[in-house]
Length: 197
Figure 1 (cartoon, rainbow, N blue to C red):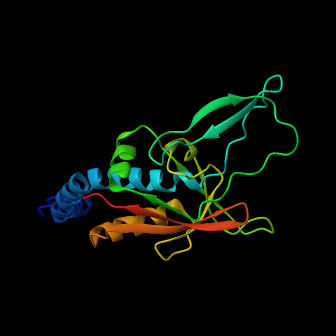
Figure 2 (figure 1 turned 180 degrees about the horizontal axis):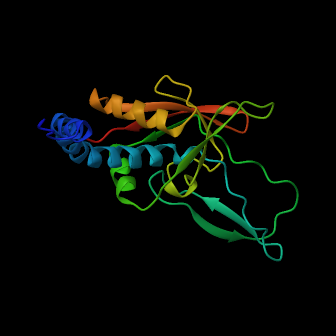
């Protein structure tokens, strides 16, 4: 009588598990080593691109009182104050010529609960293609919700993952700062973000 032994699929399964075990160990170790760096990098990038978001609509002023959003210093959050009623059209806030975010501010933003986002918008007659930012106005670094990130580190972003990848690559090279171009209401300006290590 023939000795049957293990069925072929059980043998194949055992061999696959034996061959795959080293890869699983390496994958788990890599994940454990890279997860904190990725989370910090993603948080820093989100905070960096946050000022590029489209400005959220403010509620209408009550009984003729105008609400103005002002930023006292680049690293402070926006505050609101009331003024007497103003007649005539309001002037749009001036677009900055450039923004600079220090490594100290990047670290503070990374530890905050802010989670800015960017969503791809295609080119139209009204604006260029890029990542439209949201959740960035409250960061206090000069970006506004609705701003569009049209270029970052030499690439024209179509997804947030592209920015994350470019940041991880730049940080692996120990880049001193990351830069990009923001579009706001028909004007563009540069943003530079120092990198903490």
